[in-house]
Length: 230
Image (cartoon, rainbow, N blue to C red):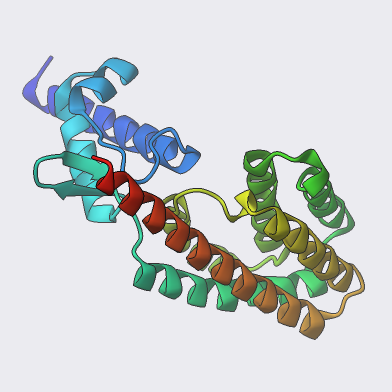
C-alpha cells in the first residue's frame, strides 16, 4: 500500500470512528460526564488508536467532548446558561416548525406524529421510552414543516440535546403535562391553525425549560450530598 493510500484509509477510518462515536453519544451510550478512553473505543470499533484519537479531537472541536485535568476526555455537560440559551432557540425553532406543519403537513405525516404521541403516553410508565417517543414526535414535527433551512437550524441543536443529562419525564407530573401539551398542539396542527400551533409549541418549550432547570437543580443537590459523604 502506498503512503497516499495508507493516508486515505486512515482518513476513512477516522470518519467512521467520528460518526460512530457521535452517534453513540447521542444515543446515550456515553452520558454527559462520562470519561472516554481511546483504548476502549478502539477495541469496541476494531480499529487502532490513531483514528480514535483524531475522531476525539474533532468531537472536542464540535463541543461534544471536553478535556478535564486528572480525568482526561469526557462527554461535555451543559451548564445552566447554555441550557437557557438552548431553550431560547428551541422556542423559536419549534414555534416556526409548528406553524409550518399546520400549513404543510401531509395526512401520513399527521398520522405518524399521532403514533409518536400514543407511544409517549404517561400510561406507559417508562420515562426513557416516553422521552424517546417525545424526540421522535419533535423530529416528525420539523419534517412536517417542509422547510430545509429550518431542518438545518434544528440539526445544529441536535448535539446540544445529547448533552442534557437525564430526562424531565422522570417527574411524573411533567410526563402527564407534556402529553397534554402535545395533544393540544397536535389538534391545532390537524385543524390547520398555524398561529395557535406556534403559540402552543412555544408554551410547551417554555414549560420544558422550567422542568429542565428544576432537574438540573436536583442533580446539583444530589452531587453535593455525594461529595459530603466522600
